[in-house]
Length: 251
Image (tube, rainbow, N blue to C red; front, side):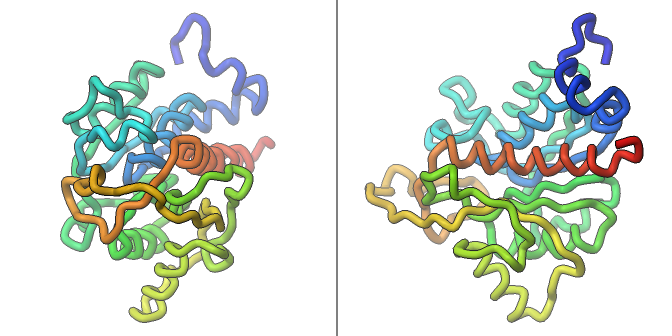
């Protein structure tokens, strides 16, 4: 980092120069940069991650503005990954931000080499693609951190971190476990998830959110708020930074 006034000075003060330098060289890929993934990317770059790949196939929509970091009146219509890249480079112009405007799915899985990364952040919505991603990453050398459902939540105090098979009260985690059991294809190792056991009803009319994504139509559109999606994203980023520092041999 060649800043005259190092923007990572407070991180160096907390974890030390060597751990900070280790953070700088770790490689992270985030799949899905919506309400959770975008905030995760922001926190990682502000924490010193300089090698990051962001993956999302959608464009910014007006309905994204309430909860997605890069979604503003000025970015509506732009690819999410491009708008987010610009934001991240405004924080650290020296960062290596790779963008992939595509969806991870059965047809594209061969294009992703997870062994090239130290950490994989799963922040995608599609159940079948999420299950596939989890299985593929667990077969690689990368460490996986996964976001469960962040919609229909309001209470930040109920956000938790747990190993996937111990997550309780989350419909998405329950659906994933059912899918793994039905297919007989289980993740080959354990991984941590961010989740909440809160489940509120939708009280409004979802007509304005009828078209939420360019790539697939969701079975149901659920309400969500920025403080929850951001905490999910920040927590995922925190897991990455904590893991790097915990595994630093000098700590």
